[in-house]
Length: 87
Image (cartoon, rainbow, N blue to C red; front, side, top):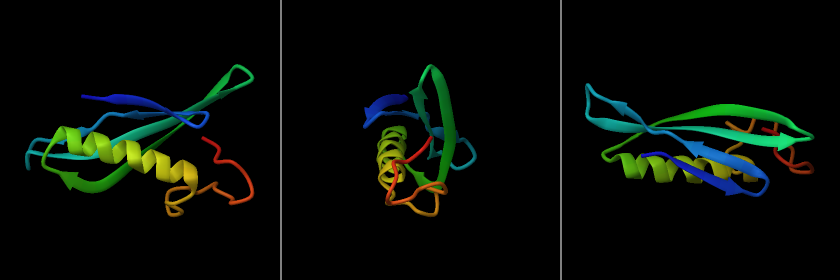
């Protein structure tokens, strides 16, 4: 399972990673945007694990939205509250 969600002017692509040794899932996302024909993308991962792929997928999408909104400053390295997030 993987999801692509458009949020604001960004695309959040979630592809959960299956941890076989523990039969758990971890969120991995890519936030991308296109401006003037140039696509930029940044990859993010969260160390929190989930028992289902769907839960990891849903968390990944929420994580991406939080990064874009500046609610995850530890991951939003280039976030400035006076400017839009830049993927």
